[in-house]
Image (cartoon, rainbow, N blue to C red; front, side, top):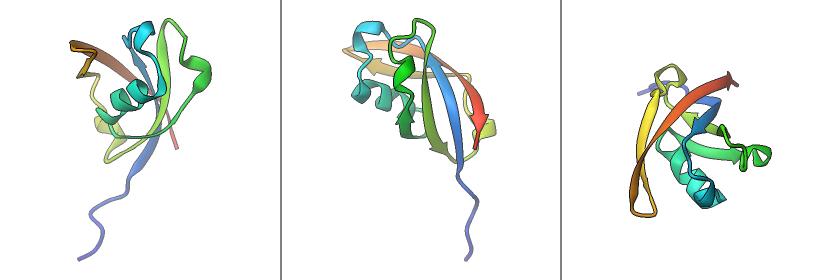
Length: 86
């Protein structure tokens, strides 16, 4: 059997992560709701709009527009928008 496909790498903006919960562990967790977090653009951690995350996923065209997750005992919707495929 051969490979089933190729993993895609993309930069994704994820918004609605509360500012008081924006540290690398939580950001990596939110990225993992979409794919495997490879890198966090540290210059965006305190940005009020979104955090930029480099991740690997099965099919970047199928990145959901919104993912749901739990931070600090509260449910959040995290809107996503890919910015660049690598």
